[in-house]
Image 1: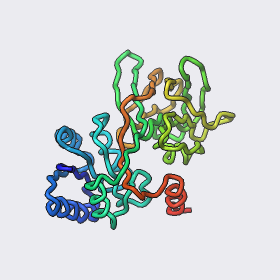
Image 2: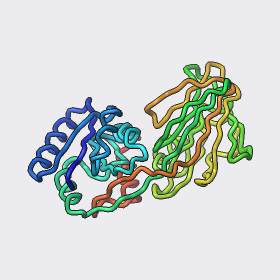
Image 3: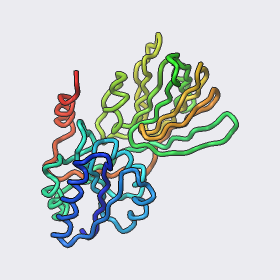
Image 4: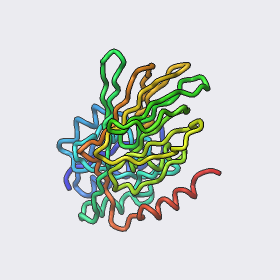
Length: 278
């Protein structure tokens, strides 16, 4: 291991201290390092070609911002939790140096995480394309009025939801917004999409799992004050009546590092759930 990148939450004082610890460990072990804020997409992308792994210092938000920059490059990432819950983190802050030592010794595995491609097709034919690790959400605008969304799965009409929103989540994102809306939690190693409406009116379909070979299309049919498309909770785009969101599998996964001895997912799920406020 010759070169490590560190991304961090620039608004977290603990992240600055962790970054200094990471730099010191690299200097002591003759490993080159670089660093950038988690939302420094261009700076991160420019370093990836010669980087063997990226260590993310922050919570899930910092990890998702970093994941946008890493994309399908194949460079693996290790999450070090500085947030409250941190489902994407495999290491707690006190274990940073020990985890880096394991990585140097090759004492780890790589877990591939399914990503989705999101294509926003405007009613005038223009398009925007993005990639998500967690989810895409089509949600109502600022007024408390439900929107009407037609959901089609690979050409088959699934439902027309009258709801606050509809979430299409990956297994990684199944523990986030989709779960809070009543969706199932999936093993993060699966390659599926979970379609979950939020506060749907008189709908018998509360959550549906689609396979990786399916395409999920969401068309906005009615909205009293517009709607928006939210990508991993990081980017919000306005959506108008007649616009459509097309969601499909991406072949290139996000690669997550798991040091040997990391907490198994289902133990992690139980532990993290106990941290949530009730």
